[in-house]
Amino acid sequence: DIQMTQSPSSLSASVGDRVTITCRASQSISTYLNWYQQKPGKAPKLLIYAASSLQSGVPSRFSGSGSGTDFTLTISSLQPEDFATFYCQQSYSTPLTFGPGTKVDIK
Amino acid sequence: QVQLQESGPGLVKPSQTLSLTCTVSGGSISSGGYYWTWIRQHPGKGLEWIGYIYFSGSTNYNPSLKSRVTISVDTSKNQFSLKLSSVTAADTAVYYCARGRGFSVAFDIWGQGTMVTVSS
Image 1 (tube, helix red, strand yellow):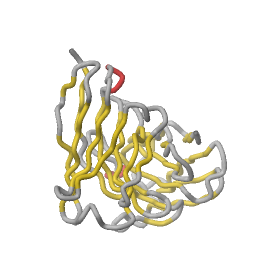
Image 2 (cartoon, rainbow over the protein chains, first blue to last red):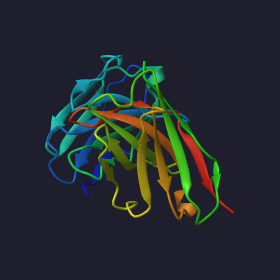
Image 3 (cartoon, helix red, strand yellow):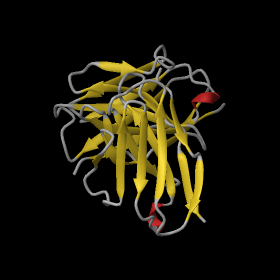
Image 4 (cartoon, rainbow over the protein chains, first blue to last red):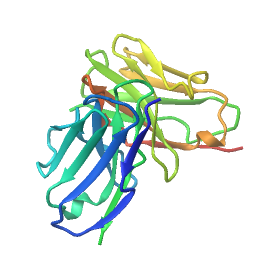
């Protein structure tokens, strides 16, 4: 199985901050990497697919980059509605696996 | 637009079979190119992929659950279903159905999730 790790596991940030979350795969996954945002009690929401493509309807302050084993999700200017937990997910091979999540809360 | 809705018992006894259904509305489950998927989330934990059924009818399951999982589709009802046999307390979780698309199997549409508790 491909193991996904994320760093940091949590962070505190202020509105307007630039936030970067890192996801690392245990082996190369090309760009088979997706990012999700989950708020408490809600289903995850797709933000970025194929490492860097913005899902329709998602604000442009969200961006993704990377290939191979190392990936980043960047929020250029954190907004109040962005406080949530973020997950990466690989689809290079089954079983599909998710990272453990990064919780972003208010400083 | 396409929407997904899970349904099924919220309480299942140990050793019994968990059965959930996902109803697809606003589009046809027979539309090409989609992976109709089940994902679960243990309380306070991360996301675990259970498996999917492709629009062609082929299935792919998580090896950690493969011996106990069956995912099937009923095109006449525009639904797909999950059966998980021989459940234990470790199967207590929120179960989501989701639609995966594209080469990156990105889950772009999710149901709201349904909590299933395994307890006697």
